[in-house]
Length: 89
Image 1: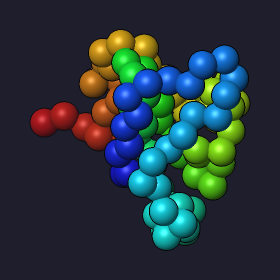
Image 2 (image 1 turned 90 degrees about the vertical axis):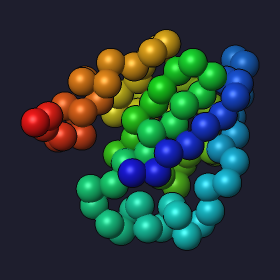
Image 3 (image 1 turned 30 degrees about the horizontal axis):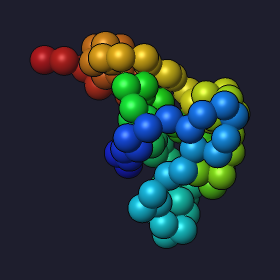
Image 4 (image 1 turned 180 degrees about the vertical axis):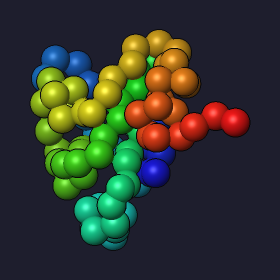
């Protein structure tokens, strides 16, 4: 899983910039499944399992549509664990 953070969301449907996401990271995520990106943007959390090449290059509305799951505010960590297939002891 690749973890990313952006302090502020883009306004309107502007492109949400994704700093420090290299071509090599994108290629690795595309080639080695199952890989995910968990991206915190302000107080929103987006989980991606596809479309890694598009991250940082599309508008915020398209970004939300591409996400596998979106949380606003504090995420429910149990739901995240379930989405990732992690079982608690």
